Length: 273
Image (cartoon, rainbow, N blue to C red; front, side):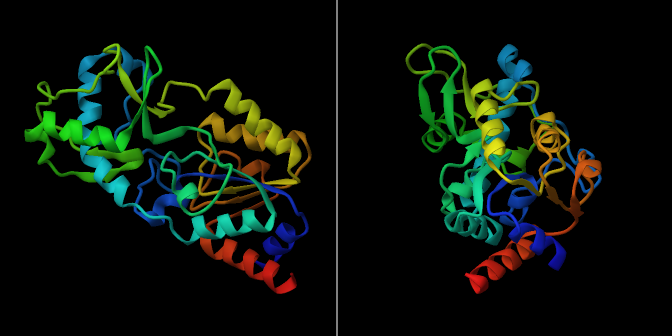
């Protein structure tokens, strides 16, 4: 741990990339286990959601139930410590693969939400934006039978509810053009917007090193950060509860909860500062 802290304090400008493991202690489950294997059924793809009413019915049913958990989720110590490290200037950029908004609620500013957010919804035809919280009322009023259901929380505001008839589930449409409404998050099969990719690449160019927390880096959107850092000959620190796709690229790789590491880093900075 001391060697890791020494490396962190030797550079004053880190880009931090966070994944699902950082929000796990807030009660938000991860998609994969410590070996990078799927722990549950793969979520609906962007293509399925856009093409099939039945996919949207299944999605909104599960999301209506799972949203209750997302509303109750609170930032954990890792979120708060990262916000403090950002205030001290040693974290120059904070990029997250999470869509829960917990970094912002903990006080972080200028967070790059790589995969978007689930607390807003967008019309895929006219672009009108909606609050996801406000949409919950509509969903429950239009679907009183389904609103009474309960299910185990799943990642990204989802809930594990299967093996039931959801063919009568009413799904929301845009009030202006009757277009398809979709959360402002990157679904599987979709791509991170090019403008967001460019913003993150520029952020890494300005940074002295890359710190990855709580991500298996299985998806290319996160893995490419390590490829970029390697090309720029910058140190790569990975702290994750299990193996990652980029273990071979890491300057240092550690397993476990990232909160103690961040607390040690903060303590070292405040003592020496």
